[in-house]
Image (cartoon, rainbow, N blue to C red; front, top):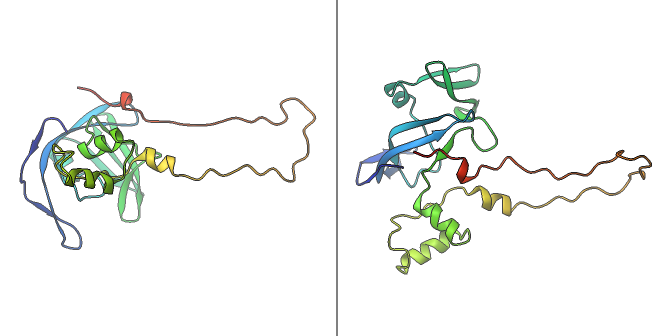
Amino acid sequence: MEPYTAGDFGVVYLADNKPLKIIGKGDVQIKSANGSCWTLGDVRHIPGLKRNLISVGQLDNDGFHTMFGDGKWKVSRGAMTLARGLKSGTLYTASGSSSNILLAGAVSQSHLWHSRLGHMSEKGIKVLKSRGLLPELESVDVGLCEQCVLGKQKRVSFITTGRAPKTEKLELVHTDLWGPKHLLEDRCTT
């Protein structure tokens, strides 16, 4: 978040009436699937919140147009569609493999140290913080790390039984597929 203002900005209550502190505010750049960048202003930083939520009322206040219907949603400004997605249960989620909306340039300190320390566990980072080795780190909330998820996936071997030998060229082709990978260089910059 840039510019980021740390402080006590009150609390947010979850559905089970559990209060979570708002420890900061700032602006966040969002990069949509079509490559356009847009800024959400006055975004609240709530470390205990496990999902990124966007307030439709706040989008309306900021001049964005939102449409919901037939199990789909869309955010636009003027003629440009900035984001879209589908309904999943009672929530509307962003389309795409992980998300059609990518956080741009706003990497948390916890996630930055998680990456710097070789994708150390959140528990390990908390131990380092408690020993005073990470004094500039205010709170530890790594969240979901796509690289950790991919690294822990089990590889499934190819089935080798029951196949007849091939006699013609290009009758059977083996390829490796990978991607798309969202890199830091793909994010918006100001």
